Length: 429
Image 1: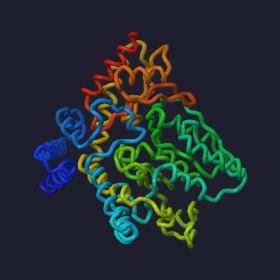
Image 2 (image 1 turned 180 degrees about the horizontal axis):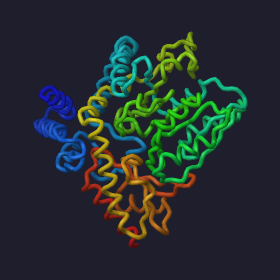
Image 3 (image 1 turned 60 degrees about the horizontal axis):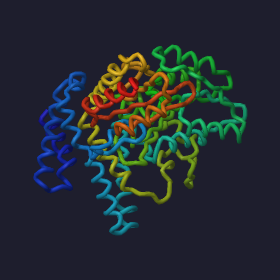
Image 4 (image 1 turned 90 degrees about the vertical axis):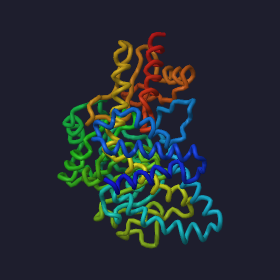
């Protein structure tokens, strides 16, 4: 406990004191440090409701005091410690770019790879650092050998960039997409599993699986789907853009062949940072989009040949991991679910308000969606921002028409009371 306490104090102190020298900044860092220590001394389910401690922990962020940001599902803000790291690495790069970028910071990818692998619960030789989930899954889409007539199973609820990628391959190469359209919310794993199985034929080669649906926050049973795919000799590709560092799990828990995520979402890493995983025995047979001299190599690093890019955001991922670990994965998940349940249980009391997400923790976590009878999602989003300065996003996609609300660990229940009050007034008007 003493070593953990020391780590948390050191990590938290960086959020306020490393780049700011005032006594006020030091006091804020100490307060944040104490809050994190206290949260870590509580069981995750108990810590989730410790409002005073979470309010103090929120000081690690520099979010607007005027706009209430409840669209963290798009891109999450970075804590101050991560912002400072990006600045530090960027300024270092500018001192002598080709030296510091290629001789110093580029070498930092290996310890970063190990750090990410430890967080993900896999081998460093199965992890590549890139820019986002779209890039990861694009590599899987275009790098997997398929022939005309081979089939892919995916849902209408998958993310557009992934849908477009598979549609283009269908158009160019004659592979075939077998579509599933799942009515959300669904709180029965067997319904989802049956939908995939029913869409599968002897020609099916790939199951494209979204772990946590961006539109509503629905959690699909990825582990069960991957296990069934493996039993049938089908490749499993998991879109984990919203689930990594949001839900408390390891990639090995899913048993997938391919996995991609965006670290600038729930890990709060710098914008434009991502991670991909390929099971070791699949690496050699997967083609990189940007080829090296050995495109059929079994080295995961062949997928990092992107040419010149900024190393500052990439290296600052390490500080984001430290901050995430200081909170703890399970503690973070419990808090996020607590926040979603808090506002959902309040707004649904209004007869004009309808929820579009299950409140069961196995089927949703931070993301929640609602609608108000007689109003479009655009109407509600506009009123929330114009009249109450609350930033949300409207979702109109397939069988979903709702407003998505996404708090994060810096969000307090007092913030959500502001949302609850606003929704009540909009519904009453």
